[in-house]
Each structure stands twice: as C-alpha cells, then as structure tokens.
Image 1 (cartoon, rainbow, N blue to C red):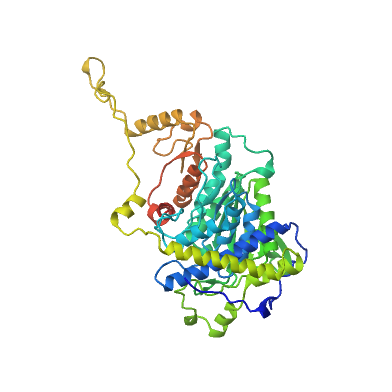
Image 2 (cartoon, rainbow, N blue to C red):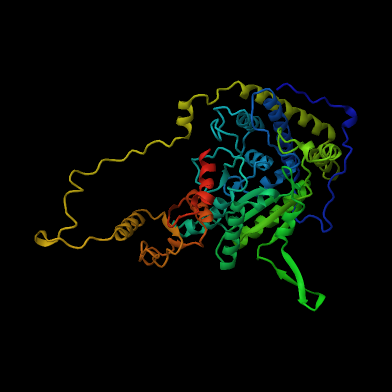
Length: 519
C-alpha cells in the first residue's frame, strides 16, 4: 500500500475539543510515559486499519474490521499485568493489546509487522499462521503465567466470554489443588478480562457467561472476571439505542408503594458493580478500568465496564454499505469524529506530555512503519495448498506406547473360581474406576459437570467427590458455560474431564471450541 498522509501545518492544532473530565474528576491517572504509550497504540491501530483497507482494495488482504473510534481504549492495557492477568479482546480493541505488548518490551516495528501479517494472511503471522486474522499475541512459553497473557480472539460475537469466566473460576481452584503460592497480597491476585461490542450483549455466549459469573457472585464463589463492553450505538446496521446501558444498569428504581408511583426504592439488580467510562477519554478509560479491575482483584468477584460515547468511524468494515441504512450527512459527521485528534489535544493541553509537533512526527513515523510492514507482509508466502492447510489445522497423532504383551488376556474378568461365570460389572463401574485412577495419577485432573458431586443419576462419579475433595465440581445446567469453563480451567493449568455434555452441545458449546481451533 502506497498511501501517504500529507500534513497541513494549519492542522497542527486540532479543531476539536479534548474530552472533559467527569464532574467528580479522576481517581486514578496515567503517567506521562503511559499517556505516550497509549497514544502510540491509538495511532498504530488507526494506521493498521487504514492500510488493511488499502491492502484489501489491492487484492493483498481480506480483513478490514478495525477500531473506528475505539482507538483510545488502549489505556486498558496499562491496568492489566501484561504477563499475569488474562485478557481476551473483541476484535475492535486492538490498542489494548498493543499497549500490553509494548509494556513487555516488544518494539512497535515488530508489533506492526505481526499485525500486517495477520491482515494479509501471511504464513508468518505468529497468531494464526495464515489461516485467519485474529487478535492476540505470541506468549512466552518459558514463563509460567498461571493462565495469564493475551488469548486469541477472531471475528466472533462473544464466544471468548465463557472461557474467560472459566479462567476466573479456575484461578483459585488451581491455586488450591496445586498449592500455588503466587500472591503477595489481594492486590496481586489474577483477573480475567474479556471485552465485547454492544451488539454482542444479545449473543447467547455472552449471556451464558455473564449469567454464570452472576451465579458465582450469588453463591459467593471466587470469580474475578471483568467484562468490558464498548458501545458505539450500532451493531453493523442495527441501532443498539443504548440498550447495553439499560441492560446493565446497576440499580433499578421501582415504586415502594404500588399505589404511590413517586415512592421509590433502589434495588441492587444483580450484585455485579457497573462502571461507566467515556470511551474517547484515555484518562477516564484508565480510571474506570482501574476501579473495576481493582474491585475484582481484591474481592475475587465479577465486575463490568461500559465504554460509552464512542462514535463509529468509517463503518464496520470496508464492505459495510453505510449509505444503505444511514443518511449521508450522518455518515459524513461520523467520519469527521477523530478520537486521536482529541486525545492528542488532551495530552498536549491538559497534561503537557508532548507538543503538537512531536505528536505529528510520531503519527507520521508510525504511518511509515505501517506502510512498510504491509508492503513486506503482502509479499510473504500464504497457505495456498491443501497440504499447507492440513499441516496447520490438523492435530498431530499422539504417540501411544504399545501395551505390555498379554496384558488384555492375562485374566478373564468374567470367570470366577474353577471357571464358573460371575455377573459382569456394568459399564459405569468401569468408568468410575478409570476416572478414579486418572485422578489418582494426576493431581491436576478435575471432574466438572451437572449433578456430578453426589455421583450423578448414572452413578458414574459415585464416591469421587469424597475421595478427591474440591476436584469434583457441580455446574448449573448450561452446556455453553460448562464447556467454556473447561477450556478456561485447562488454560490455568488444570486438566478437566467434562461430564454430561448432551443435546445442546452443537447449538452453544461447539463454537467456543471451533473459534479457538481456527487459531
């Protein structure tokens, strides 16, 4: 891609207003170095998005969904520990991932190069290897992060949510079972952070995950998950009309006396605290995210953040036909809304973190890096043959050692003394014995499912909860969250056996696995 960004000196001072602080001010603020990092990430996401659309027009890329107004959410990355906390981001929230990677010491040049590889589906893309474009980052497998780090998310509505709740539930279980002493204090406990867009609050994966988190809160079960929801008012063409705010309003006012509507009592709706941030204000994003994460970290309980006042810019993707459902004047007005400009003005005027000249120079520098990265990535090899695809997505066959000679014929389990036949054991007893042997041999193994603690109505887990305290765990009857929790458990170091996945597996649970398998 060869597009340039000509800088008019008259535009050095943005003709926009910086975001106004909330009436109560900020409880937590970014340092000067953090402001600069957040601006770098915002600029990088913008340039990557522009270059992805140019690459698509040139036939060199296919993925064009970008932040479009959510660039200033990068401050999220300053709140979460880049190695220790788990994060799974909606595909619009790339800037938070870039901040985390910069904090880990990666160079902007390397980060942009890897993202360009994703947009152009290069085989050298470290996240998916050329099978898709996904948000995430390569993890340092030499370090035991106890399930932390960035998890891969692609163009999914909300299937990242059930595993995120599973990780939150799994942290304390793994700590107890494996006797991990990794916390210096409550302020150092892990959290699981997951984000979606406002349209995805309707999706069954999110609703199942949020309900499980709410249920954990009700049962006083440790579940330090933080949900982030960005609200730009549109789910592609479908107007969301502030429904996310309505759905998550913490307090519901209702008449105390049905005969006196003016008599109000404030009811706590679901026990999950809701924080609301201006998504265009890097400082407010940082402040409210800090408060939510701090609450979940210290109380081991769920919380939710709404990132509001976001205007979607340039449509959902390059193929989005905005003029088919929006008035042209509205499209033009949305395109003129530039959160990076207002963010630069905020950094310059309010915090003195840099000058306008320095901001423009940095914008140009990151633009050059992005154009160079796309030019290089577009020339890299792609998966183009059936063998390439099989090698990438097929699980290698596990090597199984041969059984000892005569092992299966050394004893006839159906014969008693003197060759007399005895009653055979039913299959469930063999299953119970094998599960018990596996749990005996590996302390990381847990058994989760519906009605499993008391033995289940098929008695398959009979006696296992007593023999293995804390390792046989009942879940409510929802296969989506059950399988999602199993995925999360496995990601924090446990080996879950999942019981009672039945008829709704393909409707809800399977896509959690499928989305992960893409990567």
